[in-house]
Image 1 (cartoon, rainbow, N blue to C red):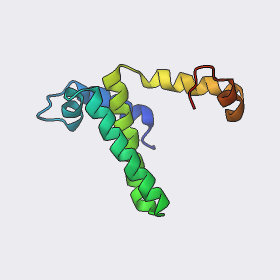
Image 2 (tube, helix red, strand yellow):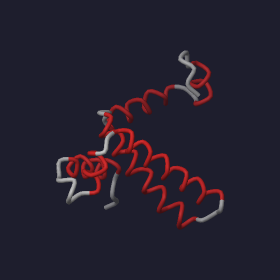
Image 3 (cartoon, rainbow, N blue to C red):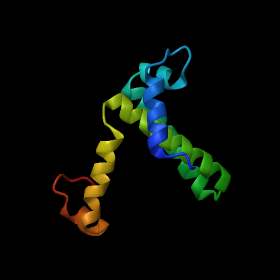
Image 4 (cartoon, rainbow, N blue to C red):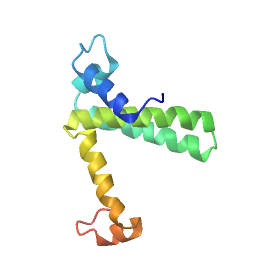
Length: 108
């Protein structure tokens, strides 16, 4: 059975309650949303670099880091994976181009 995003999210939630001395996840969360966001940004840049240099193995590893750190950031910010998935599901009613054109709040 494949490891799912939901299982990873459950592990992040579980580790959030651990001691920061025993868990990287808990230590990162203890440093606050700003540090979680910074770390996600760093991992995303590393993933982008791996992609443009055609480093398949590196991109695979960095993509895992991005997903993990996104879930940690969501945990830190109090946003659930279910909320994100509901947002994505709501976008499936129209094409991505239509959805982007219909945005009223200036998001790209």
